[in-house]
Image (tube, rainbow, N blue to C red; front, side):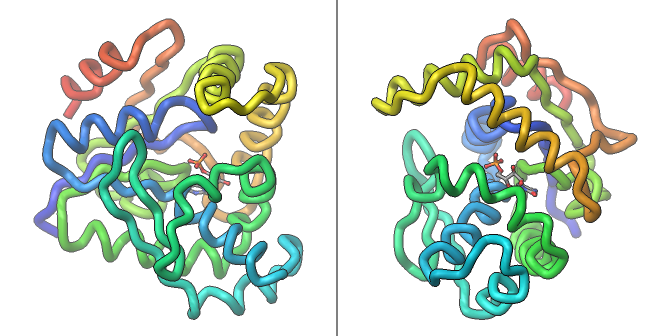
Length: 218
Ligand code: C5P
């Protein structure tokens, strides 16, 4: 492809989507939030009354699912079958079950194909867990974004407070660690730094500093 691609991978709550969205605006690239796509499939299962551990049931839903993004502030808007699910895909229930749903081979194959399609026709900044390793292995820029688990839990905690959700810090930290463990240990395209990805540790750095570091790399 002639398009430019920036792949940003990393563990949960490392700031990938915040950073990717700013970079996309600055560079006028399209931001693709692949985590939102896995979350939307998880929500589709919930809506259809399919148990998250019913792999065949989840996979059966795939051909019926349309996913669409629209620009929005502060976050991109997400539509599942033309219904807005921007907030619904961030619920604790979806967050704690998305790793299971995203471990299914047919789910990954389906979404990876959709993600490659999006990257084929436009310049993209794509964030997720397997973008540099699997979805866009030839991306000219690959970033692996990390931060200490304490700082990630703290950031999520502040975000939740701002939204009026109260989940205690220790629970958030445990949920983040559990999700990272599942994402790093699944069989198909687990979360791992690509050989040619540049490691960026955001611990102790604010958003502007991280944007500057990655803009330099790009
Ligand atoms: O990025 P976010 O935290 O919203 O991703 C939600 C979940 O979706 C991850 O914990 C992971 O299980 C799954 N995911 C994935 N591959 C990606 C992006 C997300 O498996 N490329």
